[in-house]
Image 1 (cartoon, rainbow, N blue to C red):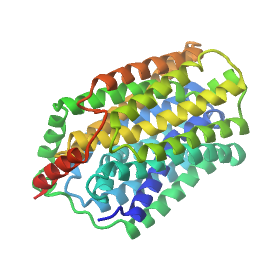
Image 2: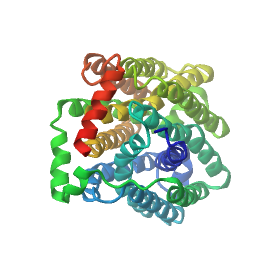
Image 3: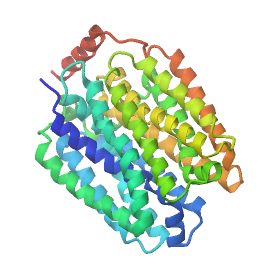
Length: 407
C-alpha cells in the first residue's frame, strides 16, 4: 500500500478553505468592523462564538455520525461549509454574519474529528503521521496563501468578495472529494455502536490519561496563540507600522514559514515527536516574547516569521499524537482533541478581546509566550505521550492493535 496522494491532496485543500474561512476575520477585522458598523473588538469575537459552538457540538455530532461512511461524511461537512460561507457573503448585519458562521461551526468539529483518521487510512503502516502532515499542509497554505490573499482581496474589493471566494472554494472541494476520495466505510466497532454508546465512549476516552494530558497541553498552547494572533493586525501596526499591503505581506510570510516547517516536520514526525514538538514550542516562546516591546518593522517581521513557522507545525504534531495514543478510538480521541483546540481558540480570542478593551494590547505577546512556555515544559516531562524517539517496533505495535480491534 502506498500513500494515496490525490485523496490526501483534496483533503488538504478542504482543510485549507476551512482554516482560511475561520481565521479570515483576523486580516479583515477593520474592514468588517467598518462595513457592519461595529467596533474591532466585537469582530474579534467572531472567532470566540465560532469556537464555542464548534466545541459544544463536536462530541455529540461525531457520535451521531459514527455509522456514516467516512468519505460521504467529509463531503457533507464541506458542502455545509460552502453554504454557510454563501450566507455570510450576503449578511446584512453583524448578527447575521455571526449566525452564518455558526452554521459552519456546527460541522467544523465533525470535519476535523474524522480528517486525521481518514488520512491515516489512506497511508501504509508506520506512515500515518506523514499522511497527517501532508493533509495539514493545507493548514499552512491557509496561512501562507488563504488569509493574506483573502485579506488583500477584501481590502481591494471588499470583505464580502473574500468570503464569497471561500464559498466557491468549498463547492469545488466537494466536487473534488466526490471524485477522488475512495469509499471508506465506518470501522466495525463504529457500526456496532449506537449514538448513545458512541457518545459515552467518546467521554470515556477522556479518562485515558494520555489523551487528557494531550488535550490539556493543546488547550493551554492554543489559548496563548490565539490571544495574540487574533489581534495580529493591531499588534503589527503598533510595533512596525504595518497595515494594508504590508500587513498582507506579513501574513503571507507567517504562513510561508509555517509551510516550510510543516514540510520538514512531516519527514520526521513519525520518529521524533517529542523532540520536534518541544523544539517548535521553545521557538514560539522566544519569538512571541520578543514582540512585547516596540522594536520596529524589521524585528517585528523576523519574530512573526519565527512565530508562524513554529505554531503552524504544532497541530500536525498534536494530531499525529492523538492517533498514536488512542489507536482503538481514533475518531473519539480526535473529537476530544478538536474540542480542546476550539476551547483554546475561543478562550484565547476572548482573552485577547479583554486585553484590547482594557488597553493592554502590548501585553498579549507576554501572555502568549507564557502559556507556550507552560505547554513546552509539559511536553518535555510527558515522555509517555511525547516520546523523544519512536522505533519501527512502536509503530508496528500500534498498527497491530488497531488491526486486531478492526478484525
